[in-house]
Image (cartoon, rainbow, N blue to C red; front, side, top):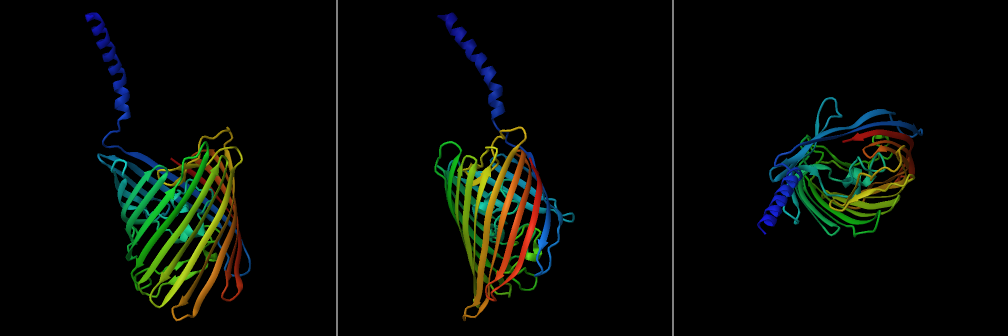
Length: 391
C-alpha cells in the first residue's frame, strides 16, 4: 500500500513538472507589447465629363500605420499613429481600457466612436477601397472620450461620451454622445445574420467662427481622391451653435461565400435659423469565387479578417455596391437653400494572396444632381486600386 502511494505521488509530481511550463506559457505576462501596422498604397484614374473641374489622377499613401498594443497590469493599451503624411504623424487609437469580467470593458482616450457597421468594420477588412457615403461623412471617427462595450449571447451594447476634438484637431469645440446595439444570433456553419442600430447626438460650438472649422456634409462620390466631384449637401458654417442628431440602421447576412449588407443612415442639423436633413443608403453583394467566407466577430459586432485561403493561388472576391446620399437645407422661415443627391455604382475585385495581403480594384460610376435646379452637376468614372498589407 505504501509503495502504491509513493508511485502515485511520483506520477503526480511528474505530471506537474510537465504541465507547469505549458501553464506558465499560457499565463499572460502582467506587462506586454506587440507591434502591428498597415500599409495601403492607392491609385486612381479619373474620366470626368465636361461639367465641373476634372479630378486629378494619381497615387497616394493612403495609410501607413504603426501601433503598439498590449497589457499594463490590469489595463489594456494601444498607441497607434498614421505616418502617411510626410510632414506630420496623426494619432489614431490612443487609449487605455479595463475589462470588468463578463460585464464589459471601459475605454478612456482616443478611439473610434460606436456608429454604423461600415465604419466599425476596419479598413483592412472592407470589400471596397472606401466606405459608403454615410459612414464616410456622418461617423464621428476618432475622438477623445470615454466608452463602454459589453457583449453577451451574440448581442453587443456600446456607448460613449466624447469631445469633438481629437489629439490632432483641437479647433473643433463641442461634445457628443453615441450608442450602438447589435444582435447576431448563433448560426450554423459559415452563416451570419447581423442587425444593428446606431444613434448619436452632437453639440457643435460655433462651427465656422474665426479659428474654427466649418460643419459641412460633402461626400466624395468616386473615391478618396475625387475631391473635385464633391457636392455640398449641407453647410452649417455660419458661426452659430449647431445641434446634430444622427442614426443608422444596419443589416448583413453571410451564407458561405455569398454575403449581402445594407445600411440606411441619416442626420438632422439645426442652428436656430436653419435646418438640414441628410440621408444615405447603400447595399452590396459579395461573392468569394474561390469559396472563402467573410468572418464576423460577435463580440464587437463587425466583420473581420477572412478565414483560411483554400487555394495556393489565393482567394478572389467580387463585389457590387450601389451607394447614394441625398439632402436638403432650408431656413426655418421656409425658404429652400439647397437640395441635392449623389450616387455611385461600384464594381470591386479583391485578390487575397494571404489573409493579410491583398490587391484591390474598384470601378466606379458616379453622378451628382442639384435637385433644386433640376440639373446634373457632374458625372465621373474612376478606376481605383490598392496594394494592402497588414500585420
